[in-house]
Image 1 (cartoon, protein in one colour):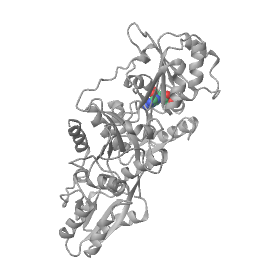
Image 2 (cartoon, protein in one colour):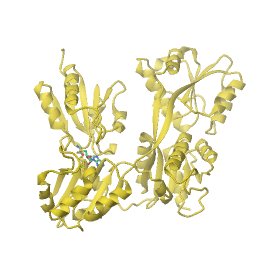
Image 3 (cartoon, protein in one colour):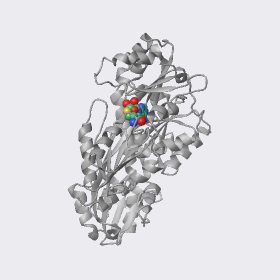
Image 4 (cartoon, protein in one colour):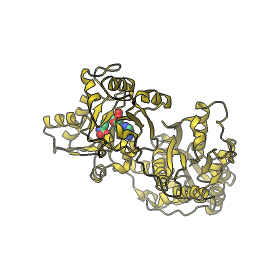
Length: 512
Ligand code: SAH
């Protein structure tokens, strides 16, 4: 062993990436290995170096993918082999995070470590829902209690009754599965059935949902709403407060449902919230890359033979470079190629890697890109199109007809799933629903029809025929066309194909 590594136990905060400490983020951006679990989610992995090893040790109610002892062993082994490890933990490492156990294991092997506190969900999640855990003359203390017991379901610890006698705010973590029992025992041991209570699911995240009710009804109301984990239960007078920033800004009071990848949805949600909107993330799009598959591997190997690289999305650009760097290549393998991009957003992503686009069509669509390329390329050119599965066939068809040599290779695939806050019946309550890709449109309507009432989406018609109907907002023409293909019409199509363009278009509409 040459040198011992070091383990940093870093609190990731409650979920919103903006709530991680600067120190935590700096450590993430320079570590060799990150060991993360379910709560300290993938959202943070954007910040680690390209070469960083990512080890998921998962922990989700019900499925522990690695036992605590195994996690301890992983940390010890990594540090013994000289790595700088960030052990990323949801909230704060010492609040029901089992951080202490990991430290004892490290100490046993003489491994250096440091803890970096995080914003604990016990305080932050109620706060973001407008509930202060203490309040002058109302609550002089708060108590953070686990709802998870060794004994398992249907039973709480024998001394649980003491909590019912505590003044102040009670905050239960990991308690959703035991909610009926928790509420009953608190009432049995002295809490008034009318005590305000609240349950917050996915606090600080785009899918945040809050249910408030008196203690005697909270459990049935939460069941009706179908709240899931992670969730926090708050019991006490302050749970009735809603000190949520009464939204100012042009989108105050507007409810916007968004669709997109975690990364995209996070940025869009932040931009819309800044303008006062209330945002829910409805459909979670997942991008799966095909970088390791034979066609892309061959494309990387054959880079010297291509003279043009064609990108039709920012995701495509990002993943292409991810794959390029993975095997130790660098940008010098691209010195000889020209770049074509479909639009602004793709072009911007490309400039992030130090390349300006040589060609971008005036209109954001596959047809315009194809027609433009036919004129831009010279005889003998060879094009590599690296894009998503299910991309528009018109691009390949046009190039084929023009006799241009090209390889059209699947670089990634996008699939969609309803997020926790997607409730088909509630979709009608939104003022706007945003779409940022054709695959997002398809996934949204799939989710609606699977969870909805019939084979056609519930009640959405465009253009809005009822003031309560959500308006369907598209980031660009391609997305709008997919909406038409599904039998709907975009009410709004952004003039510029990026997040700011989308937000601007909604603001403009809200003034009408
Ligand atoms: N160390 C963490 C808590 C770990 S225990 C912290 O300081 O926050 C895990 C529990 O935290 C979950 O079961 C849930 O009760 C709560 N929790 C964490 N993040 C949450 C979130 N974003 N929304 C709601 N509850 C959350």
